[in-house]
Image 1 (cartoon, rainbow, N blue to C red):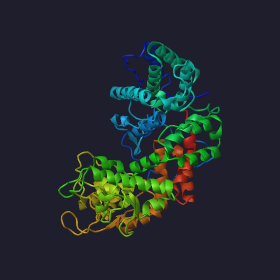
Image 2 (spheres, helix red, strand yellow):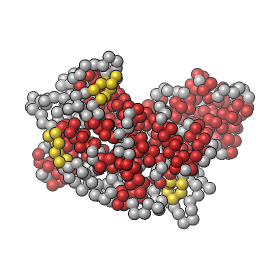
Image 3 (spheres, rainbow, N blue to C red):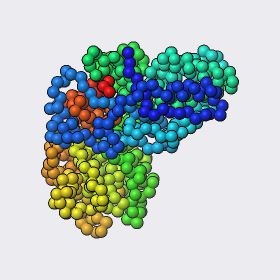
Length: 567
């Protein structure tokens, strides 16, 4: 007995000029959806940055361990239905079809929940529907015309080849085996299309139909039957396989993971751990690890960051790309090739740069673009001093105490800052009254004094001793205590010293575990997740901040392996 969740809004296929009525009816049936998704409105709307007070990571001073009263009782927060993100869509298309085109970049921007792309709030618009259908047409035509051998090795003119393709391709596209009704309906499309237009067109329309289905575009999750009187049930092995692949690869499961789901390997915690470690050793893990760090650190803001080119004539799209590429390579090397430690991520003076970035950092260019270099450890310390992060959290002509301080407070301490009231003028400079005015001081004391510690680094990350106006800059900063669990209060001098403080902080380790939990589940944690959050926090600390082991730990939590069935 399973519970299958369908999308909020049905996808309506548009009429293809050569697609038979049979094919259209298949898509209409596949997209109609017979079970409505449970409403998910537990503070997970657009713009949410963290849970409320009293919830794990919510800044109440109460830890997840304290909230986890009975670890033997399985309880999990409600998991929303979500669509593929642009990155996930692109990666699945790559793995399914061998297509590396940028078709997904034409889709509308992803919706974020808790700071991470989720696509779980708004209904699909008509424009988005058209984009999906056009992408399916384009990809299917290209795959059959240019890469048919990637799809199948059998004789496509034989009916048995088409039916075998439906089962094998459908299993990968839907991340589970097709049921008999699906096999029959896709088989009917194949037979009818093959009879009218030939085998190649039949294969094209099959691919097109699979890529247009909600079972492809949505992460449709199924559960086993819950125990009598319980409203929490274990997700099916194939649903667990999908959860693992989207966390660790930002793509769908491969055959090995689907086989592990089918043969019972994922029924045990040890089996899940074995598969998770195998997946982290696969090159595909790089995309997910990089995507998390870019979203967590706000590096994605670099794409729309504007700089005053009179003050910074070196600023251009090439430099912007170089900054982002440095952080991508650094993260990948630390987490997947190096010791995977949070400490290294925050304190390493090594990095990977090219000639344009070498000028920003004031060092000799490497012999080869993005070769490894070692900075002066007193000037650069891990991601906090990367030009990408510094530029992404600055204004066009000035550094921003608010943006840089807010980034540290929220992303490393999980202490959310309330959005300013309507009508408040945004200013990157510190107005002293903001720290004394009762209506402003609560938030600005959280951010501004931290941001001042970054002042020696210009809006594009250049280390300097005077600001844009010729005034001597200070690196003095301070972390004030709030009602959150913060064990790094006090003064610091510059982001290098700040990075050392954050790297040794228990609160920061707990927060990073929470950030990964949010990314893995694409939702905010709730009180129901307290035991799961406590588990990953404790195991992350026990591993001495090993990010790879943190990811393995997340895949074995109740929140990851179970789903609430309550309406």
